[in-house]
Image (cartoon, rainbow, N blue to C red; front, side, top):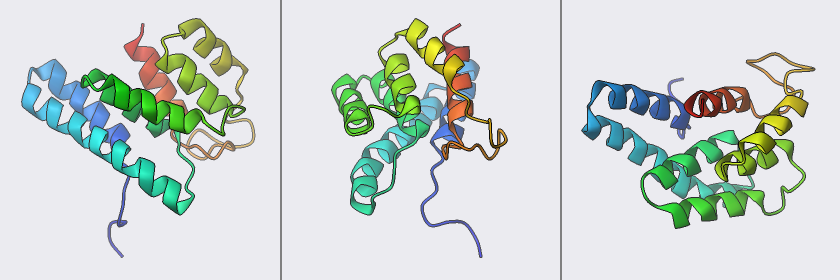
Length: 142
């Protein structure tokens, strides 16, 4: 029993970094954003090696990496995720959102039925984080 060996806490770390940003604590904000960046860059190779499909947290990671001033690395993360997944609706949404094509991202989101055969906490699309990541992104871009 206990904590899993390799937990993906990018969403939690990102949300916490936003809180620290609002509180004016740049050191803690940047430490958490660096944690998101490190996990995203490290998991790219690990996921490819283990055959694990990337998920919407990959988009959030690329978003943070770009925000940290490493646009080339962020672009590479997104390109690697997009390659071979061109028909995946979540990947299409993520690419539209990442490239600031808000109209296309909104259209894709409206046409996706991610909870049709599931629930918000256990969606049928196998990416349990997508709805949360999508809402975070939409709130940040209001």
